Image (cartoon, rainbow, N blue to C red):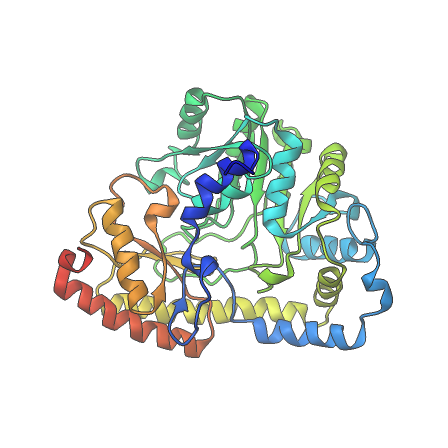
Length: 424
């Protein structure tokens, strides 16, 4: 690696060997069904129709110009403000001047980390979370250090142990800490933070002069779950009057993108909502040359479409149907799973013989041979005793979900029959 900078060599050494097979190999869909990535395929057809109409009827030579609008194209910013005002119940109206476009939610994380941290600073990330996302997106360009804040029990994620756990993580940090980032709805637990949770997190950040980042990319992906005694509804950080609770509103930032709720990961179009002009300006300096005019065109067409509300409702109903189907499979085969009310995935204990991280990785490889791709709990900084679990993405076309369940049933029965010997 002598041709690389120290930074480049470090990134290659740390990350390249850990990339998922779905990124490093050409996947033959007839051989593998990918249930690892949190993609949303179930509304692709409806979204694609709008994108095709836009490509056929709205593309002009201007769309091949340099992108207009330092913070984002003006009309798209207006449509985004309408989306937030209509669906996120903000305590005060979100205006275009509060929004800055980025290349997806990953670009939002990168832009925020660049803007509020110096190289070597840390950001607290409550566990569990997907290490392949935050530990790459927050640090690969910026030199920021994501600090996993582990929990002894999953009940501490939303319960009374939430703030004491963060306090301990902050005390034990070996670098200056500048922010806390959470996913709401939670990835991988698929649960919502309550309004009280969000206020407590803001108070924690205020006490320690930290920024609060709410990654809300699954905000509109509610499917419900009859197994939950106290199901929650989505509460956005935008719905909290931070100033009324004694917190600095300029240090509260919300991330959203078209990737999950609107099934358009490949459009690479996201945004940050912030009341800080300085943070908005700084993110724009990092992000404004990374966003394609064609992505802006597609986003504008979708967010202004009279079908948008129907698509958002359809997304929830199709997610609910897919979740019921995978839940019924788990129940019929006595597979443990964690009830959840939102997102495109669910945690299930598909490798109950696993006692170590090595066992989990071996089980992932076993299911891969059966034609199904998963991420294991080992990728999510789970509590030490939480072994044998995998995140199963279910937001795929009905026929592919049927095929995936068929493969999974056969593979799981083989796994249970052969036990841990299959992993050796």
